[in-house]
Image 1 (tube, helix red, strand yellow):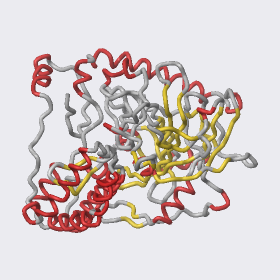
Image 2 (cartoon, helix red, strand yellow; image 1 turned 120 degrees about the vertical axis):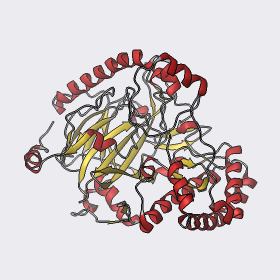
Image 3 (cartoon, rainbow, N blue to C red; image 1 turned 180 degrees about the vertical axis):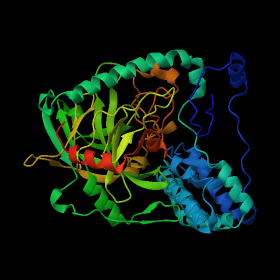
Image 4 (cartoon, rainbow, N blue to C red; image 1 turned 90 degrees about the vertical axis):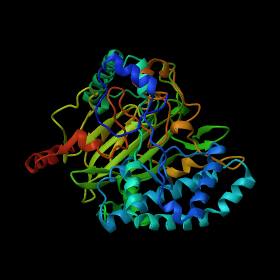
Length: 497
């Protein structure tokens, strides 16, 4: 069963049986590959990318975090860049848009080639990377001079969602989704009740242990500034990015009841595993679109060896993704989080934002258990489940263990005994991290619910459709507060919870 592409926000509703039968018989509509007119001008370059793709695909080393664009093998996209496909206009914006698409292919292709298993093939492919870079730029410049090819590119730059419509059809989604909604609501109620308890009353099963990359004595008093490109996307130097990550890094406070509650470093030993001898925070920059602006997002990810529970949610590997969305002035507007499975989406708005008053129909509500405190918070994390139990300001005099930081792309090409290997496999899933819950929740249309997965492949709602990397996720849930309300909330936002 193929997956229908598109970015429609309409949610699944009961369909007439005849229409369902027609869908099953015809499958997803697919368009023929786009024949880029640029191909005719640079045939040698185009063939170079075709050959490279064949080598990568035959070896099974295709990176699943970004999307290939049919007919344009030298470009790739993600949901954020795809959102500009019908908006980018004029020389400067089109130059910048295609530049970003080309950069995604360059990074992904280097990682794919680095992961090739055959040493001789890998060395040969690596020797052609410089030529590929030269050809990519030639093809991109020729594309910018060809209006027809640009039109084809706009049509082809579509990122498929991570829901399988056929599973929802066969799983009788209109009947099963309300039952799943009840389970989600019970979890929301339990979580809200836990957040209503004083911090001092939260149970401790092991030893509260803190890790952080943030050092208060090295954090500057003012936030770094940045320029914007023609699309309004922040342009960051390596130094500016480093300073921002340091400034807004959280403190991970984990109730360590076993080694499975220790933050570690991901390694490849015949599969993904977590070594707890060294704690690592993986970092990634992303963007969201909010009221005609592009806002910068800082992503911090940590991994645990397992979720050791014996229920349907337990299994090998577990992890958290903490995201900080910065306003135009560099101050946080929103904190939100998911587990590495895409499960347990939680949002913690600052005094600048509030939930929209109207709920999206046929979609589970977001969980907003508390407002964010001022400053980079401590994340209190439960043992076993690794749920975030509370956010609060860091106190003085508490010992914090040092952790290292690494770019997220390290997970896409991990050192192994024989070459490198991506942590992620087909559909961006982490092999070996499957959970028993997948046998129950498959009618919601999510592949292997509970399994760890790659950034860019996080479906975060069982009922309805949401993706963590959707550039319009945050404005669909939150809106700016009025200045008067913002001022009142600013005075109360640092009270203990």
